[in-house]
Amino acid sequence: MAKENMGMGKGAYLKKITSGTRWRSVELSQKMDGSSPPSVFIGNYGYPKVFAGPMIAPYEGDTTILDTPEAWIPAGKNQDDILKFRLELVRGKTTVGVQDFDNKTIQKLQEIALAKNSVDSEIEFKAKPRGLSVSEDHTPHGPSAEIEKFEIDNVKWDQHLGKAYYDTDLKANDAVISLYKDGLLFSQIQKALSTGSFGIAKNRKLVPTRWSITATDSALANHLYDKVKYYDTLPEYEVYEFSSLNNYYAVILLPTPWQYEWIEAFVHILGNEVMIFGDYEQWKPKKEYSSVGGCYYSCKFAALEALERMKKQAGAIVLREAYEGYVPMGVFNVRENVRNALKQKPKSFSSFRFALNYVSTRLRLPMSKFVDQGVLLRELLSSNEQKRLF
Image (tube, rainbow, N blue to C red; front, side):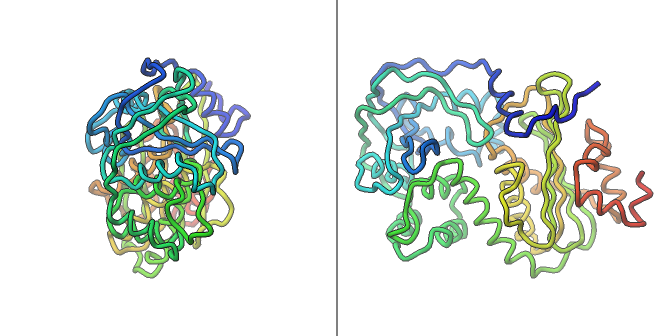
């Protein structure tokens, strides 16, 4: 019999998954010439003193694909592909204050984050880089070590990022939205935000990578919500689906004002356990940080982005199942899978009952497991029309 939720929270469960990983990262010496995709990593331990540094592949050339999550699913990359080239990225690190912009390393990290293309680099470490990092919070990376010396070649900035950098009267939140409107990738905006490259001059600071991802998702989701809430509601129920990276996603759009629920199930990842987590908001964005972490905001951004594209308002119930072989690789997994789901041709239904009946045929778990975890899902089923489902 499956064990459900095993008395542990989501963070502890995902940490248990990653603790059993057995991969090898690249073998390196203390000196390395290579190219940054461009990519940087800002830690959060010890804040406001943090480990910060570049992520560099141990070879020169165009390494852009190594840190462009938006390209992975369209390019047909599977989980093994992504892990393989992510573990090639070597993380250099040094301790810096989050507002110490006179620090040469921080200045070089900003150069990298604002770069239009891969950045050729030379780096010398205090010791041979070792280990690897796999986490639900960020994309994996290979070995790391403290920096002894670090140099980069001349960098050509992206013009939009450069404009935001020099506008020291522009709030960071407004810069994120402006760059998104200019068509920059989420990953480009997030990295530049992480290096303190936006915002009112006196307020600029490094933002740990984990925090900057959620901050970007939240800023863009709230911006899109402020537009979507004025559109006419969708005329009927629609179901969008997508499967990749050992996950299945079902997005059910409702002909209602904005309301949103995210429910995810981890099915037999470690053995015969079933772990289900969820969170929701109704009619307006939630104020407190979500109990399920950054994936809540990544999914919300992807759903609102699609509604803005459709010029429609709708509610969204998003169900996810992760299966055996799944590895936590960061919230890009949710964002990009939901984005891709919402680019598929939907199936339309005249009632929530019919939509849910269809989705139930696509899930491995009984729909009742999601209903037990859900709040909006239960409310929708409590109406007289929906009671017939069960």
